[in-house]
Amino acid sequence: MSVLDLPRLWRPETHQALFRRILDATARPGQIADLGDLLDGRPAALAALATFCDNTQTLADLTGTLSETDLAFLDVGKATPEQAGFILARGADAPGFIPRLGSLDAPEGGATLVVMVESLKDGAPLVLTGPGIKRTATLAPKGLAPDWLAARARWCADFPMGVDIVLADATSLMILPRTTKIGA
Image 1: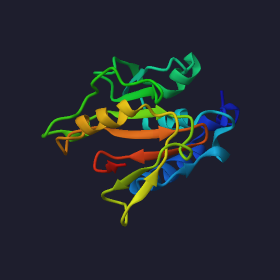
Image 2 (image 1 turned 90 degrees about the vertical axis):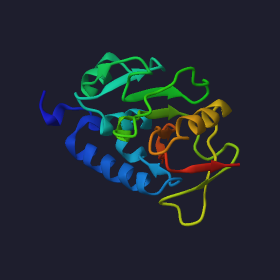
Image 3 (image 1 turned 90 degrees about the horizontal axis):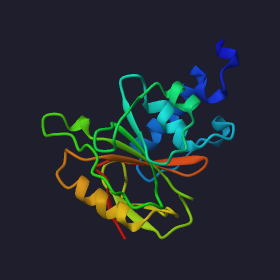
């Protein structure tokens, strides 16, 4: 298979464009990155994983939505959610696991959770504060069980340890670094 035969999501120029948009969203928590023009109908959550993952990473797919082809292109090892570096989950399902949180010596060992939600704009508003946010930002995810917010608060209570969360709807995503505080 040549690069020209690859589906668009897996092409190097698409990865570069995705990386730039996701990096910008990471630096500005609460900012929504629209990826729709790069996806060719694939979900934004898969685009996030395609950007973050490589053969040195492990993934727990709690959704069962990734095909064998997707997993082959991601080239990640499979792991339990307690051991995985990356976790793909549905926002409507309460988290029933404790992800890797890293350690004081290696906080980068905390997991990154990619949580699929119905929409990033049509839910109950949440107020975000913290690094990368001028005063406040508002997030309004629809399809995110309240248990996610309580679990994230527990997981990120001992900074610098914690998790980073990517919320993704069909075509967009936003990043919640562990440093971002969430209020109602």
